[in-house]
Length: 178
Figure (cartoon, rainbow, N blue to C red):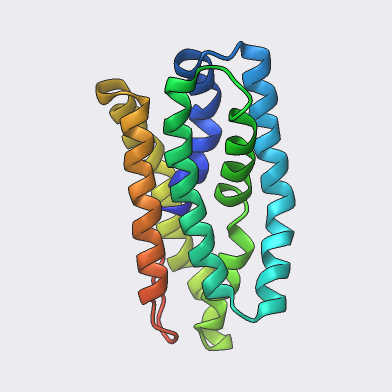
């Protein structure tokens, strides 16, 4: 789910902001850039928070919920039209949907014996992550085309909630990739 949400943000945000929300292309591009900068800053910030609190699982759950909220708020931009609320929405969206990677990897590694980390991260983990990257945007695009972007973003929000549930149910000694 994390990979799917991240790639949907990258692939569809500008199209959505222009075609549905009503921003001009330059503003939509600037908003997309703001989301990416937020993600760049979010990665070390979330990792720092997880290290300081010794609660990477809780931070990961928070990121999942942040992605769900961001998708919901993105859907809510449609009736507002091109206005300033797009700025905080894309910043939170970028910080969560692009900033999850380090915390995710740390949580996975904490659930494994040191000898298992290489195989799990290079094989098992990437299989699920890349599956989300391939399937997520494809399904989102089909849903946006058939039911509209608002429905697609709300469905993606549900995916963020499911990811939060999966992370919270993840056993400490097993590997489950949302």
